[in-house]
Image: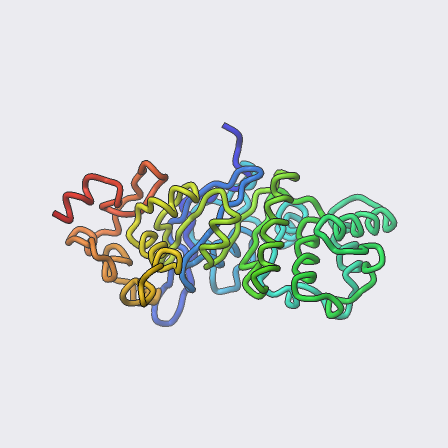
Length: 330
């Protein structure tokens, strides 16, 4: 098989505190292939953004990678630091943050920021870098790109600023792009435009995209596969259509059932009882067991294996599509 652009293998991220060691990312594994968008979804605090930051090397101390591997096109990058990691970011890995104003320098024009990035990672002259910067803005749909190249970030609307950030992430032609909540701060119509843009660039350039979001609508529209995270662990992974229509993990099924579309005709939205536990107060066994209607004694004693299912894989003793689940509920 073709080597994945990104391979995450048994990744564990730890944060030492005076109250003990927290694991915001606990034994997470998945691949992203060229031209594929993997959506990573879950509640706030589930470990989505922390996983992305670990991949691109932006963990803030004292958070650190305790164990596991991160491979970029088959090459290990989890042990890189300093200049080696900085050379990798931008050139082979790009990042799109939630708020474009935090990603752009308000004192520099967008052209200066784009040309600086291009010249840092590609062997080109300033004139060539400027042409590439204009082409990048034009590619992401900035009208009159040549005229807007000397504009400052505050002179763009929110949607246009996000397009500039996407151009900045892609201008050095990376293999992997991590998009952390790229549409959250935008209105619905602009969200649709940004999603369409990401899909087109992914398809045309063959870039692998890790799309971090809490919005299942964005996942359904943009992603090819989805990874559902809960309390730092990967609850379920599979093709988007299969996971949405036939979820195997009870948490995933609860997420799907709590959307407005799934609750049509009811006076209230369905909801999952309780809330996700804090990392320092995780229960024994499966972290979801206190909220799960199917939980058995086994679930409360052991987190359980990651089981291959007809839809993908799920970290559950009794996947919903299995006969074991049917037996457990009888």
